[in-house]
Length: 301
Length: 225
Ligand code: SF4
Ligand code: SF4
Image 1: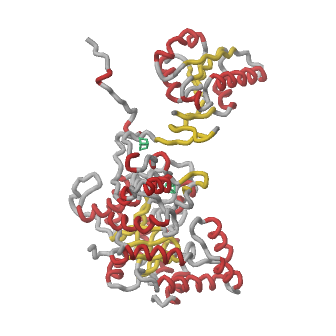
Image 2 (image 1 turned 90 degrees about the horizontal axis):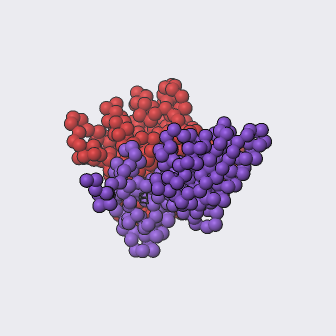
C-alpha cells in the first residue's frame, strides 16, 4: 500500500473512479496546461499526463504534471520506454517523485514512426512489463534496476499500466494482464472501448483468471467529436472498431458534439455494468472541456 | 548471410568520378548470393560507371576484380598490386569487406558501393528478410526460434505490444508482428508458458553498445613462442 495517492485511496474505497487525460502542448506555454487543468479540475480523481503521445514532441509529462498539480490536479505521470533507457527512466522517476507526483503509468510507447520525428532512433531498452517491475522494485525493494540499494527516499508510486483488449493475439490479452499484475501493475487503463462485445469477452477472460479482484480496471472512453472523427478512427486506428451505429447517430444529430457526449455517457453506463470494472478513464482528446459534462451526465460526480 | 543492396548510382558516381583509375572489387560470398555485389552486379555497375564517365566526358579507366571473400586477408592479398595501381577502389562487398580493404590499404581511398542492411536470408525469389540483430546473447530458445530483437519494432521481450493487429506490426501492414509469430509457434509446440514467464531487462553488454566487439578463441590461436 502506498497510500500517498488519492487515486489509490479512491479505488481502494470501492468508489467508481474517474481518470482523465491531459495532453501537454507542443510548446513551452504553461498557460495551456493550466487552462486544461482548470477544465478537468473536480471532474476526475487523477489525470494522466501523456508522454509525447504518438511520438510527437510535447512538453514533458513530468513538467506538465507539476504545472497541473499547481492547479489542484493529481497527475498520473505517463512514462514510455521509447525515448529513455533505464538510466534516464529511473532518473526521471526520482525527479517526478521528488516533485510530488504519486501515480505512474508504465507504457512501452507508440513507435516513433507515427510522430513528427520518424527519423529518430528509438530506445526500447525496457518494455512496459520491465518498466512495471522496475517501478515496483524502486518502491518495495528500495532498489535500482541494477540491484543497488536506494539510500534515502525511494519513489513509492501507485503503479498503473495500459492494456489493449482489442489487439492480437486476443487470447493472449487476458494472460498478458496477469503478467502485468505480476510485474507490479495495480491499476489498468484500457484502450478506448467502442467494441463492447469484444471488451465484454475480454473481461470474462479477465474474471476467469481472477484478475478483476487483484487489479483495478478502468476502461478507456473517448467522446467522438463528430461523424468525421468517428469515421477517421474507424478507418485508421486498427482494432478500435467504432460501430457504424455511432457514426449514424452522429450524422443524424443536430449537434454532433452533444451526441458524441451522449454516446460517451452510454458507453460509461454500459461498462459500469460489467463485473470487475473499477472506474473509467475518460480521454477527451484535445477536448478536455467535455470531461466534466460527461462525468456529470454519467452520474459520477 | 549479410544482406545489402546497391547504393543509388548517382551517389556512387559522385564519390568515384574524381578518380582516373578506379578498381571495382566484387565479393563472392554473401553479396553474391543476395545479388548485390557478385560478379554480375559488379560488372554491370562498372559498365554503368563507364557510360556515366563517358557522358560526363571524364577519362577514366574502370577495372573489375572479384575475390572469394573480402572479409579475409588471405583473399584480399592477391589483389594488392591492382589496388596499389588504382587511384581508388570501389567495393561491392558488405561493410565488413570494405573495412578489410581499407585496413589492408590504409593509404588508398576505399569506397562502398552497397548499403549493408542486415543479417537475414531470402524468403522468396527477390525478397530478403532480417533475422538476427547480433545481440550477443541469443534468446531464440525461449521465443520459438523467432527473434524479437531483430524482428519486433520495439524489441519487446515480454510479448506483443498493444499495436499488434491481424498478425501485423503497428508500424506497417507489410511487417509481420514478431510476437504474433512467436505466440503461434509456441502455442503449436505447447510452450505458451514461456510467454507467461517474465523476462527481465536484457543485459545489452554483449550487444552493440560497448565499442567494437571481439571474440577470442584461445584454442584456435597460434602459440607464438
Ligand atoms: S536473440 Fe540476439 S543473437 Fe539471437 S537471433 Fe536475435 S539478435 Fe540474433
Ligand atoms: S506490433 Fe508486434 S512486432 Fe510490432 S512493435 Fe508491437 S509487438 Fe513488436
